[in-house]
Image (tube, rainbow over all chains, first blue to last red; front, side):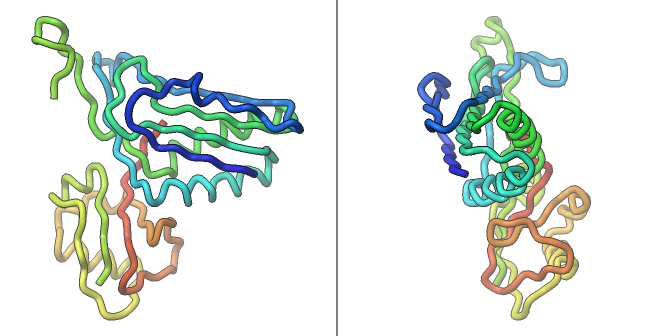
Length: 140
Length: 80
């Protein structure tokens, strides 16, 4: 399978990353993970990520190698922010293409689970929302 | 020398992002932790929840770390 990874700074505009599936693929499953306005019940302004970049690609390839034995797919694209991501912005975008939808759906869900278990990316800083009276949106 | 990288909470606990640990021979993960905790006792409480990666791959049980390796201590991840 083809694997493409991008760790980016700045806005992740999902539409700009939406891939064209190969001619033999009948399914393209996409997922975008956005920053929620609360964390542990408290309002936040954003989340800063930390990434061990040298290990992300080897680990993603290892995970894909395991998952494709169960759900053969044609390609995976993952784009992940590695900087400060504000509320409502996308932190991650995933696109999985396969000849048929069942494999694409299942691979994509399993991959996101494994991303959150094994790939060395951390929500490193939770920036609390302090409101307009605080003199701005962001504290910390 | 083992080149150790710290991330996330471990970077705060170690108060640095990198440490060179002098070793002359391959060490087990158990020995590695013992040597590291002698240098940085503050890491002790994190040991159970931390995974050890060597040269960009998680180490399996019984694998060893060699002089010159890049070791990363990986606390629970939270990407996505």
